[in-house]
Image 1: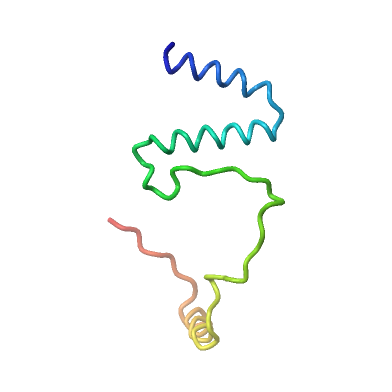
Image 2 (image 1 turned 180 degrees about the vertical axis):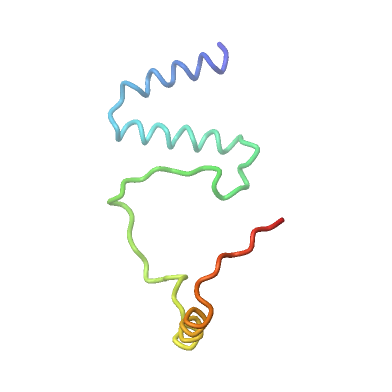
Length: 89
């Protein structure tokens, strides 16, 4: 059986599943493919789906700016306005 035929059979089986079973099956498939893929060392090679209810916030905000730097930013925007980043040539 060819890979395409296996894939067609797999998709047909996925279509019969409810959402929770589909997500579980797809996550298992992704994990197995990741184990054998050429990009398995890349951090986003194997994205797994989870329910929104499983996501929790953290206290870390990388966009926090210390008060002195925020004042400098306010002054810069007041004096120069907003600017767009330069595009690489």
